[in-house]
Image 1: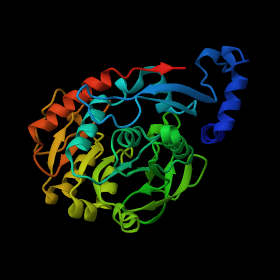
Image 2 (image 1 turned 180 degrees about the vertical axis):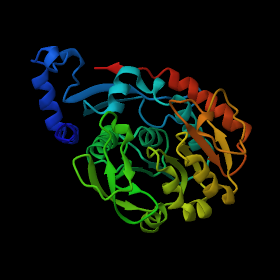
Image 3 (image 1 turned 180 degrees about the horizontal axis):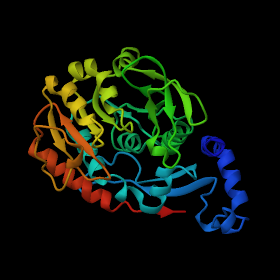
Length: 321
């Protein structure tokens, strides 16, 4: 019990985590020592190449960004090594194609993390972009990304769910991409209380006109959809949502989405994708698990755009400074 609390303390506070690692690099391996070469820095500075299709004539936004983000966050570490070429490339390609082929309107990045999807939407379009991230230190990193090259997307430090008020966010000890809202009254170092709201309630205040919505909330995606049904009915946005298998998420999503008459496409393999009659988390690659929910049949030009963005993303490899 005490060991679990100490581990939670170390993971909750970045300065404690960093100081602990600096101590452990001086210890022998048999006493929990660490290899200094594998200890992340306090800050990670790197250049990130952004995709641009070969036929892009608008020349909107920068070709590269120089980012300085907390060194131990998962996504910055991966981006510094591999760039966008290996960060959910199929999902990103579909996301960018949706931006190319939908009517003007806001982009909602729900479960934004440090804001990769928000960054690309802000860099390649003139749309208003809102990044929702409830974990305080990750939301702070997303704001740093937003100020890079004056991208200017809005970071909303809020957990979207099926209720308004507050909720318990459980911090994953080994992967900060897996922080999620949980139904518990437990308090402790692994849990933090965060504000929550439904998408419909938030949109009443923000008065946005959402046409593109991406959802990745580590297993609470049906709660986000349940709290945003009014938005989906009224605005009919295109939706990208992650579906993790074997958690009952597929059945809940189908029950919520089916009355809205969306088409369900697993993002898997080479486009064009075929619509499915049911949502199954195993249909898409294990590292993405993303589905596209389309309010209408995508035109042939849409799939051509997906292919162009996939090719552009392959060229975006890591450039650590």
